[in-house]
Image (cartoon, rainbow, N blue to C red):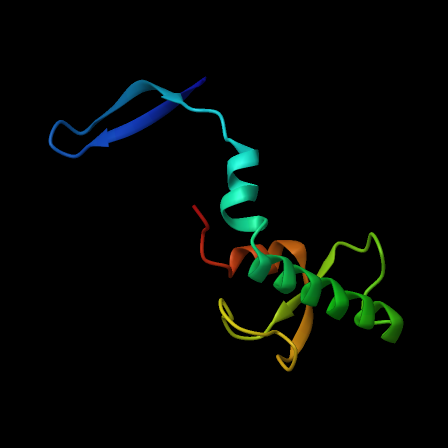
Length: 101
């Protein structure tokens, strides 16, 4: 377990209170088994890797350049085969993504 500090604003008393919160350590094995290790997710990861390799051959991205391929639009399900892509920085790609919990 990990202890982290949270600051909570109380609008009634107009004060900030400091609290200690215990967080449970992430179980990476469980995450892989439940989501990343599924057949559908493995296929999507393979599609993303294939599209990245094609972009490297075309000269759009290079290894270690800090760029990612952004699949235009939000594609959470289905194939990524015919989805147009654009090159963006890692930061820009992560900002526009909805948070994953």
